[in-house]
Image (cartoon, rainbow, N blue to C red; front, top):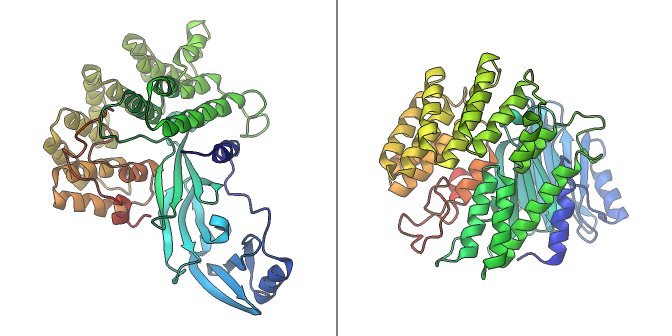
Length: 485
């Protein structure tokens, strides 16, 4: 359960959502210690300094050696300064990498970042400076696309990542996916999770059912419906009310932040164009998003706008109107047509309207038979019908024929890992794991799904089961198998 102070810390963080790095501590090492560290590294090309809070005689630096870089952590004992931790950086990582002290200065967070495509690629490690072997990291995440982060408290970090959906590449507002990394003092390890938490319970409880349904709706992008479920959960729930309340506060703040961006609080830059229809879609206000279309403001030349209308109709299950929007996009040769049909198909699967979904999957298959969303949704339909073996065969065969250098396959690989784990097929599970560990770019959602794997597929409709162990016993630390955590 969150304390009041932690709640305000969370809210303060959300106000800084578009910051790329944590602010430094208000207090640092004593001036004489700082001077000693700087003198010790005189002559080195230090591109970034970080100092631990007062009383902790530690300093971290990023050093440029020309053809390569290095991050180092130094400690001072008396007049002697020793290098305690170091790690090598590639030349392209030097300028954008950062070190920070967290956990009151006891842990060092190192983010190694480099430019990648239209954004950046980050790898992250945390070293425990109180351990017998501080050079051995206590937590790590490799090769994450467009990673943002911010300390929430001495023991928590919030991560967020810009969603890679086609409609998220245009003008603001933007959709982000949020995650929480928290230090468990009893186990001396960090845990990784989605920032809105579901609950696994051993007995039927309406509040938990509503909370879990809200979390699922949120992860599917329907913020308004998720909020409604959380409010209902708080009214009827008797247990885990702290988690439910925390989920509601975080979601309410996210909604408030997005709404404020259209009234002078836009952090994307002064004068930046703003799309009110997109805002309403991201908030789950589908009726409001459609008002401009239905009132006659039909900007047919704006393909992204028409696509958002189509997505709104899909969310509302008004498929005749959705098809009209799709026809406009087809006739106009919309540049993101394939991605649009992928998103429509996902929504249809969420809706469990399988007849309409089949038609869209058929269209996707004709235009792009090796489309990863097509393979994922085909497997999800089979798994949802209880045909796990067929879903496993489909994905295993698909992944054997497609290169992850050409397509983003993490979703298919992670889903195959879940299915094979449930079936107990170790050979397939190992193949999926090996493919995942070779991922060029990690999506944090795939990591969070693995971290939350409880023996049930993440695509299962949310119900609270009294027999949570009827499939398999979920691994206690699933990310450890992937070199993460």
